[in-house]
Length: 358
Ligand SMILES: [Zn+2]
Ligand SMILES: [Zn+2]
Image (cartoon, protein in one colour):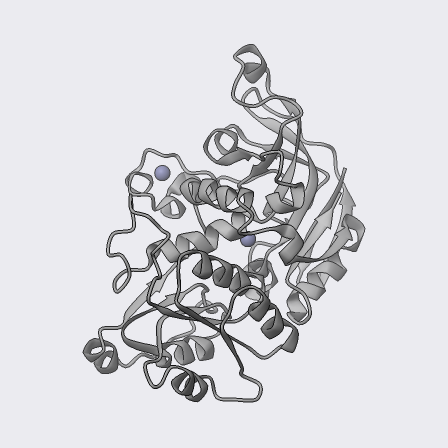
């Protein structure tokens, strides 16, 4: 079977390896579509894992089930169309019990084999049991590739604290952002997903910021009331003008740069929250002004990846049509052209979601 393997950022090769042999509790899927993640084009992040088979946003069809699953019919059958999360938590440790699945040791150590951009993928027993979801009939394989990215956005919004609902758990998300002005910095696919969900969760006003015309235009199409072209205008000055000095109640920072984070902090209004949806390079420092943060009651919240409660909710939002591949997938490539697809995502211009089709 063919796989796309990254050796260095500029060296992605298509190789042929044997189809993995599954164990008694595992499943094998024939991959139908696999998304390229914006996180995968951060060279320092992806190269520290190299060589690796790219991709962690796959959707496919189950073609084989392990012997124990056949003997004891599980909830999965051959022929099921599924999304499989690349990490799966134990559901028993202290992190799992409080829904911090991404901090679970098991979550960190699990993976799909050999990776997402592969003609066949082995879904280990734990991933199959704890974070693999059947796709409803009206959800396509391409929609399935959006489950993980949508779940990451959903988790970020769930982590925000006052002035929004102080306790998200068990309460309706519909009004989570009501009466609030949300600023989304960086309008790649994750920024656009943040806009779509902020709209869905009742934000009163959404403002998008980017330097690419195409992305600014898409943000307006997806529900932003205003956009700021940071190649032409100052983010902070324009936001001040647009909000009559109030600034934003929630600022979501997508670009993985300290500069964007600092701009984001200056864009938060009193009592507001900045959500860092991105890391910086290891060792990079973000210098903050605690005096300003303290006297303005500004919250700094981070959010990394997502767990099974998020993927299940994300799939519901996709099923409802809030998120759809036809809105967000702008480019499709065969596996042979993975390097080209990867370059397009890294370039971050006239593209949103880029998907490898099988
Ligand atoms: Zn991803
Ligand atoms: Zn755990």
